[in-house]
Every structure is written in C-alpha cells, then in structure tokens.
Length: 99
Image 1: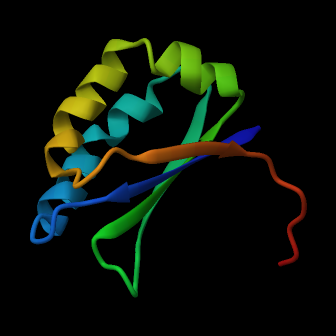
Image 2: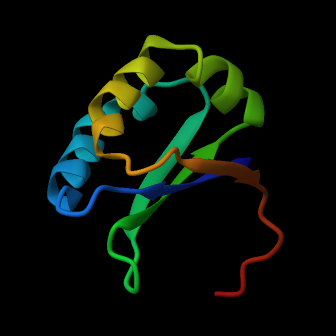
Image 3: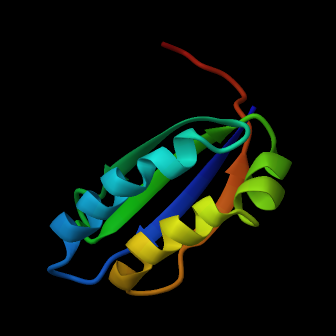
C-alpha cells in the first residue's frame, strides 16, 4: 500500500468551489483500479493550501493506470481551473502507527 500525497495551492477566493469540485471528482478515484480511499485536508495557516491523500495498492495503480485513464482526465478537468500553481505529488509508505 502506498500513499499519494499531493500539495495543491488554490487560487484565493476559490476554496469553496475547489472543495465542491473534489467532491464531484471523488467517484473517479473510487472506481479506479487499486484506489483504496482518499481524503482532503485544508491548511490552517495557509487556507489556500490543500493536501490530498490517496491510498493506492501500488504506485503503478496511480502512475500508470489512473494517470493514463479517462478518470484522471475528468479529475483534472474539474479541479485544475482552481490551481494557483502546479501540484506537488510524491508517494510514501507507512512506517508506523502509534495510535
């Protein structure tokens, strides 16, 4: 299992519209091969910065299957108008859980 951690800086004033677009796009992740779940968090100190956490069975499920799918194109169509800059994306794996 891997986590896609995306940092998304959104145009000021478009936060509510961006959040609505992510809700609309969530089913595209849900029906994608290897997608286990996703969550969206908003920055407290920087309210125009969001962190999208998507749990995948493998990096390939994200980078090959999802990124080359019509579902990814729909995700980008819905949310990219709100990006202030290109997203930063990396993959991580769990090391430990303490609670």
